[in-house]
Length: 396
Image (cartoon, rainbow, N blue to C red; front, side):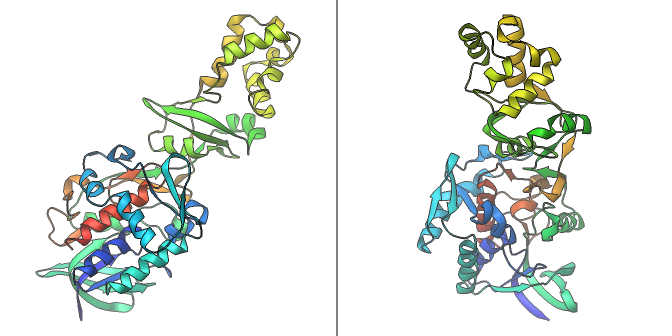
């Protein structure tokens, strides 16, 4: 039976970072993954260019039952540390909006960087390999891998990710391991995911599919100002993906489709200058034509036919509310099928925030998406993977 210091389950961002760091300490490391290639989420992220971190990453960009849990890891391995690693490897990158960093070339550069660093640190990688059985032993853990291969290790790191994008092989494996060893989990749900509408609303908004606007989208006290996209199923785009992490079934969201425009004053001015034009024509100066038309239709038949001259200030206020005070109750989300990450996960109360080790199970670590720490859209989840993986790698 092979005896190894550290077995890491999951060759994603967190798992590979942990393996690199543990290997640097002279630990004998084996990384296993049931997928045929490493870093699949890295490969598809950022449209194939990998949004590998965010220069503004801080604890406030993360959601958790314990918002303080991520502070230690994010402070000890920062976005600047990862950028320095990328620069050392000569990978060209650029900043997009809101501090997001992307490779100039392919996401494969980041994967190759990580697998290269793993090799240099002596970590072994076994792909198309699953952990079929895990037992606690006096000295650590006994695993049975694919094909009945037995392995013993002192430290076991679970970096198996969450449930998002099952077609890429995502499962609830990590939560099952946590439960097996008595750790609690926070209820999981799809996050950074498009929202859907019920059939009647969908029918009314169907002509808008493919139209995007810069919007402010809110849920409760949380709001995001980014692009919103109408789809065949509902709404998507960065602003919607962001708010989806805060939204719950049965809640309304608020949408301002012209947040930079005082719609009431703009319509009053249009009325004064050319009272004969229809309200949808006036709105089309600011909104895509189809959207302006749909907004007026939503308000009622008479709005489509009325001219601005026939409209009182009170009526113009109603138009303003339809544009910048739109309240809509999504029927659901597109689910794990398209969710970028999983909200919830292994309860941070059962983990040490400095080492990522399970408090009640010496030698067992949980890192990355499987933990109840979820970042905003824009490179934050990768930063959590690098930071939590780095921390576990110092101790596993």
